[in-house]
Amino acid sequence: MAISRFLRPILLALSVLTAEQAVAADKVLKAVVHADLKILDPTWTTIYITNRFSYLIYDTLFSFNSKFEPQPQMVERYTVSDDKMVYTFTLRPGLTFHDGQPVTAADCVASLKRWMARIASGQNLAKFTAGLDVVDASSFRLTLKEPYGMVIESLGNPGTAFIMPERAAGLPLTEQILTSVGSGPFVMQRDQWRPGNKAIFTANRAYKPRPEKADYLSGGKIPRLDRLEWLYIPDANTTLSALMTGEIDYFEAPPLDFIRLLKDLPDVTVLNIDRLGVQGLIRPNSSQPPFNNYKARQALLYLIDQAEFMEAVVGDKSLYMEFCGAFFLCNSANETDVGSGPMRKPDIAKAKALLKEGGYNGEKMVLLQPTDRPQYAAAMTVLAAQLRKAGVNVDMQAADWSTISVRRAKKDPVEKGGWHLFITTHGGPDPTVPPTNSWFGSRCEASNAGWACDDQLEKLVDGWSRELDPARRRGLIEQVQTRAYESLPYVPFGQFFQPIAFRKKVTGVLESGVPVYWNIDKN
Image (tube, rainbow, N blue to C red; front, top):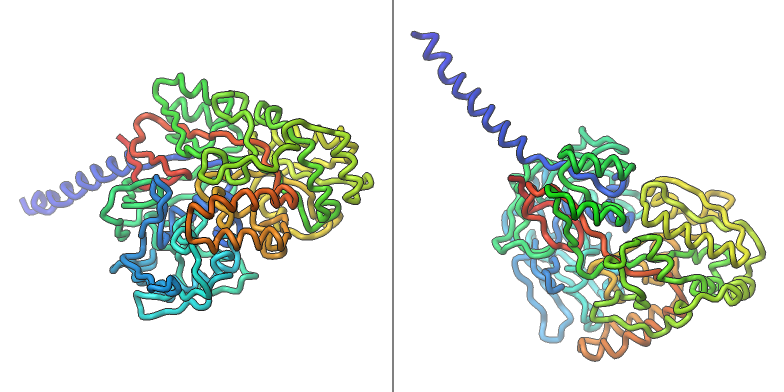
């Protein structure tokens, strides 16, 4: 009888544990992501995989809703002085980091300062900033040199500062942050991270979501999953088979030629989560000859036939625009095609002449060719063919995307591991306005990899940013783009849409512009 009384609570506990384990198994999402996670510092790179990782483990002060309006996220309230020169922010109570430490104003100030030094939208805000100071444990103050119309928008856009502990954010800018302690809805399990294979995240049960409904990147970030497994599988056919058989739940970036097949699968949902779409861009290295001369950069315009690029990159005409000459995305409030005439019809002879005027004399030109990004690889193949037609000595150097993302940060000459051209994309609300378009920033050494450098373009962007009236700002956008087509921080080669695919038992996927994993559940 005593043994029975002894065993009963143990058996009951085991039955409860088994039930909990069964529930937990249903809350594991296996997602194949588009690239290998290697860089954890969101101020060190603009690559998508690091940005998406950051949305998992960090939180932000503000976030955009589906109308692209900045909404408070970590901030409970803020005030603006009558002269629009002083902004005071107060944090929501009870915010904590994954290690149990409270989130303080000092953490926010350190994170903002790091962001202002390294990321385009932050660098632009920094130009107008006179001071950024802690008021007390939960409040901080931003003081401007002059009124700036993009303060809250800069803090809310998807390229904003991710708030991390002061001890991490305060590292020298020459040091990459290697820790992963945030205050966001998921916790990275560092002991289970296998670069080249997988990264594991678990729900942050101490996270305090906002009370509002999740909307785009704003509102309540509720982690409904117990465990998220990010898997890196370079072969898209292997991933497709795994999705079809249910071995994985979520395919983050299926090749676009898979989309028609995926739409026909009864157990799979295909969803475009970014209504603005994705802009493909060619990034020249403005710090290296011949692209340190604007004429050589302009030569690229005469090699571009967007229809040819889109046919190679996308194929399905329902997934791309026939032509888009807008630096700030078509279908956005800042759409204009002014200056884009050279891309309307390729002119190989003109491109060859401009390359010569820009100082090109047959030297090897290094193009970085990704082996695991089919769309990028297809675009680079088209570009290489056009360059060869113009007499360029093309040297295609292949590597996986994460390796390219590290290499592109090198400013060394080509013979020491440098480069001339790479392909990338950007999308969502970030690229739709000049100060938050990270590839548009032309601050020379402070610019993104490629180091676009044009003081005149920066002055035009500053003038646009100073204008507080949105209607007047719209009138300045053509001046900005006209100069951009002369200076060419990058060359847009088309705009398309990248749907995601997931098993129908997965619910709650948000149309958030970028893939996020809060609000997701499994039935």
